[in-house]
Structures are given as structure tokens and as C-alpha cells.
Image (cartoon, rainbow, N blue to C red; front, top):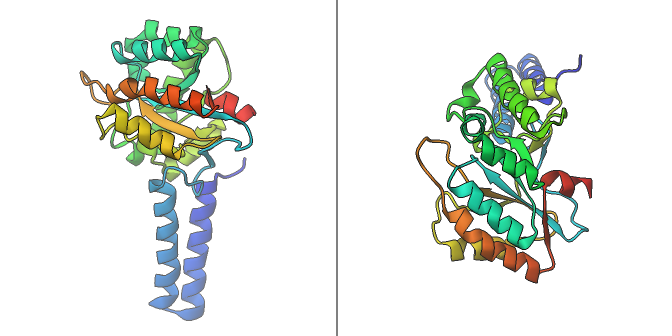
Amino acid sequence: MTICRADKVLLSGAAAVIGGAAIFGAPWGIAIPAGALLATLADGIFRPASSTLYPTISSGPRDRPCIALTFDDGPDAEVTPRVLDTLGQFGARATFFTIGRNVEGNLPVASRIVAEQHELANHSWQHSRFQNFYNRGTQAADLSRSAGLIREITGVDTEPLYRPPIGLKSPPLARAAHERNLTMIGWSVHGRDTMQQDAGRISADILRRIVPGDIVLLHDGHDLPNRHRLAGMQALPLILRGLQERGLQAVTVSELLRH
């Protein structure tokens, strides 16, 4: 069995610390390689696009007039159907990185996502804000529970795409993902719709930055119960109209990567 990228980083870092101590002694022989290891781990954990701990895809091919819109934290019984209505009006497709417990509570909406040829993807079961502290076994159980429900809805046996909560990764998550051979997805354009509530500003900022191959992060749900995020849904018609003007087609992440 091969070891995951995170363990290779940890092993090589430990070897560098031991070798530095043996050759140069303390403190610099230890401090310099240890500092480099900590900086490398910080990049892998906190930078969503980083592939340091696990291979992460944040954009697709740049030579086709396609982009991928992604929606996190749903489905939401109020917001997601309106997102689907707008996508249908423009003939656009999207990928929904869903929280498993939200799928369980909104099965008709999740089924509609699939029926309308959008992509249902995994964004963890709980979306715990402490998920990066889970051990490998807990990470694996979380992945498996959401993936199993998605398979039931889609009728497809392949592993769904995965986006970690808040984009954070950890060595235990990397080990669990490696065992499942997950395709991990980040983003190249953040809609900032969790902070910005002005639909015009959200759409203008996205359209100012977007280029072919981009993966755009928006939200149709919330990780906390009884809360709703409306800004991304309100900005969506403006975004899709702007994409049409630029000759860009909105496709699912899997479609984008197949190109």
C-alpha cells in the first residue's frame, strides 16, 4: 500500500530535522528544517488550492470557453430550488458540494439537482468547524457516510468529488482521502458571497476576474441550522448573463475536467 503525500511530507521533514541536528547540531540544525517543515504544513493545511498534503484541483483547462460554477453547504429548501430555476433558465449546469445532513433533510431538492443534470458532490456530513482536528478514522467515516447517500441518490457507484469544509486539509484527512482515491476540488475564484451581500458587487467582482477554466465558489446553503445564504442566488442571474456576453459556458466540474 502506498503512503499518502502528507505522510511523505512528514517523513521527509522529520528526516531533515534529524539530519540537520546530526550535521550542524542545535539550535540551528534543528530550528531551520523544523521551521521549513512547519511552513510547508501550514501551506498544505490553510491554503485551499495547495496540493502539499493531497492533490487538489482548483481550475480546469484554459483552452476551452468553459467555467464551472460550484455551490457549497446546501441543499437549502428555500434557496437551492431558486438557484436551480435560474440555472435552467440560462441552460447552465453546476456542481453542488453538499453537506450530508442537509441532503438527508432535503432529499427532494437533492434528487432535483441530479434530475436536472447537475453534479452532486461531497462537502462532508457535518461540516464541523473543528473537522480539521478529526483523526483518520473519523474523517473516513464522515466521507463514507456522505458518499454513500450521494450514491443512493445518483445511482452512480463512482466516488463523488470532494471539497473539504472551509477548504482546510490535514494529514488525517489526506490519509482518509488517499484510501478512497478521492478527487479533491478547490476553487480559483471565490464569490465572497458569505461576506458580501450586494448581488451586483458579487457578480461584478466574479466577472472582472473570471477566465476560461475557472472554478467559481458560491453558496446555496449554510453550515449552521436555520440560517440561509441568499446573496449567491441573487447574484446568479447577473453572473450567468455576464458569462453569456463573454462567450463562456457554465458546466459541471467533472465536465470541465473532461475537457
